[in-house]
Length: 418
Image (tube, rainbow, N blue to C red; front, top):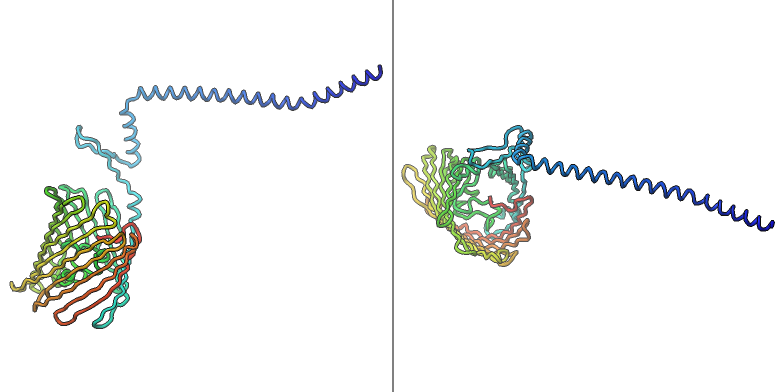
């Protein structure tokens, strides 16, 4: 009896201890279940509110006319810029939006730098400029506003800094005209407009340096450009500049006039040609000089679209007649060149140019030269060129010169033509 009673008491004690140990865990489970039910209730209320807001927004949109949205956008735009951004020519025309704010590109112009280094040796005469940093050119370009742009080119030479070009131009003028104002290289034929580091050779053709000076023809003034269609594409340049060229106008400062017409035809998908004509006129009353110059230029290019990186051939040439009159007397002198380049592959370009020119004034003496070149395009930023010049001069000052040119560029405009 006693043993039975003790066993019963011991079992009751063990059951009580086990129940006491399970009570905290059960209370924790009950608390989590209550919290989960509360979260589910909140989620259901959020879903109900979102559905109500969506139905209300759809109803408001259906009731509100579309014009009210447009009007709200216009009002917001006007408040942002401080003025109306729409212009309506008449009730039948479409609305035009014109932003007048300054963009980031206007605040930060595009800047490029081009280096042009020469290493040369010649067989006759004094050895000069065997190694020469021919030029470092800085280019600044930007859109001034929706109607005008600017380009400024500054060349750094051993003699100092020179503003080679600095002009701004308008686009979108009436009659589809373009107006350039400032200092610029003039449209005398084709190559005179190019910067020297972008030429097919290391120097301008002999006719340009003899008739217009070592740097070619350029000046301060205004230029008007217009393109036409019909049986090809045709371009017209009319330029008025200060006639300050030391060779062509002997440093005068009277207005000089230039007219250039260029005609372009696409002969096939792979070939095109252009033919142009140029006339120049200027006076210098201080020396009783009247200068007239006229010429024609042509270019033929073959460039297959599927192989443009590996094959192309260009043939170009220019011929000029120059007459410098004093007191109504003066002779006409001739000069010109013909040159060709052929792309041997993606990196290699071979070329040759033949020059012929007569002296501008005085005894008629003829200078001829032939200039073969071989150019290696390392990349868009770097090219190397080997050039040999054989010059035959009238006074026996013949010259054989071997020159290696290295051109490199940084910035968005690589080896820009102009």
